[in-house]
Image 1: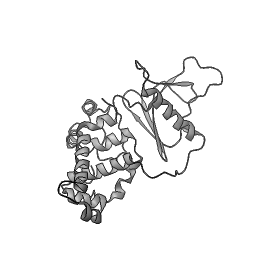
Image 2: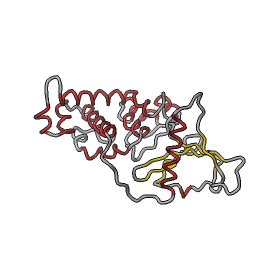
Image 3: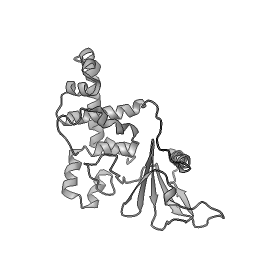
Image 4: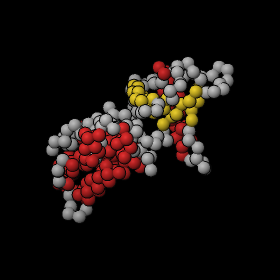
Length: 251
């Protein structure tokens, strides 16, 4: 990480972007905090095969948070939309138009194809573009087969619905409801993990996460706020040391 000073973890506002991350992006936030991965990046960043150990196609700079990093996971997350040229398109078919894809776009070549990440307020989609696909060409979406009805099909529909809703008029802003408990859990977990990695005590971490007043009224030897912060640190360490694979659907 870029700044690992003792006080870098204290401003909760610095973690607000975490509330809008999807599971693959959250997986990266935990992996980039892993000291073994950071050491591997320094030693073998020019060796793509070194990334495979961590579930990546290519090494990614751990100094970049999920707003700027675009890790290529292997295998692909179920939410990645795979596009292929349509070998037998019907008349008046919809054709590929790169600039009609909404959002801020980022392209990276993972060694086999282009990976396109498109983000706009409140949403992010990932597309895999094969070498033969060009603007104006008829195309089809693909999803990996499974032996029985599975969540991949539903995930594909959800990602397509995101594109369909945003393609007509890309929103400049989005009104969001109060963050879901799951999103707040990830924010608190990452902040507590950073506090622990910086050498802060559980009590110091609790002050940074929940405030001095909350610590004064809810800090007990074997329960209350102390147990909550301990669980957050334990969860963060578990995700950092390998649990991130579950978020990125690598297992």
